[in-house]
Length: 343
Image (cartoon, helix red, strand yellow):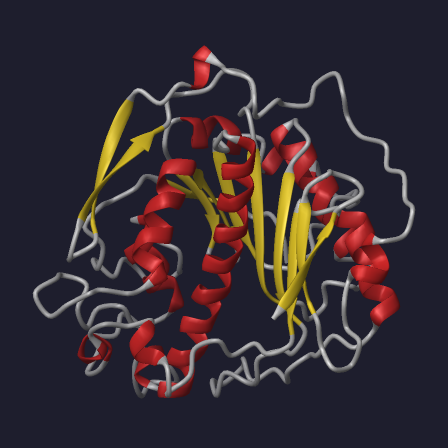
């Protein structure tokens, strides 16, 4: 499926899809490139920090098992390490008003150099079959533009795959153990006044593929953590095609989100729907454990209540991600605030 190659700007590795069309990032990573890196204020993930020691634990019920996870203590000043996991269809990632702003925005927000992990699909997903949202698929075909965008982002690891559909009717049982919990759904807000978004099988598969891509990006981050021997303190889950508008002059852009790091340090979530979500590392662990294989069963409160992607994310994080109200499908309730970070 891919090949592992050295990342010249970080000394770590990237896994890049090898496609019949010669789509590979080897041409990018094998060239000689020198990047200026931060030194004085760059966090050291390998160093011990008494202010960031995990002191308590959180119990996560995954229906079949109960897992005890470390919970982060409040950190001082800025978090020791922030991982930004970018996942999904690349779509407009290579546009000149998208990729150049991703790194500057996050470094300005968190005050440190950020570690990026990119799991992207070259093929875009098709229309949602929903009024007002039937956008045509956007496929990434510009190899030169992708080179430039990746050099700007400088991810610790990147995996590019051709097909956006990991989850299909043929293999859905590997991702959802109790499919009956996703039929006859109690919709918070119906789509086009007819049914729950996930009641439509195509839409349900689309939501599952979105989740599968995010899980893949988290696995990239976790492999990096294992190699470094230290966990990140904060995880941001986001998509590749957001426009952060860091150069806007009509207002102080960062003033609107300056509260986010302190808010996250208290164990909370900051979010813009399911497009951009910042959370403590321990909550990202829960997201991964529950999201890798959905085990929601008829005896669980989540059954027939996860009606759309935003509800699925509420099930995983305990925070409300949509504008449709709470689905009451999660066994935890996490304090959250909405953050307008991008378009």
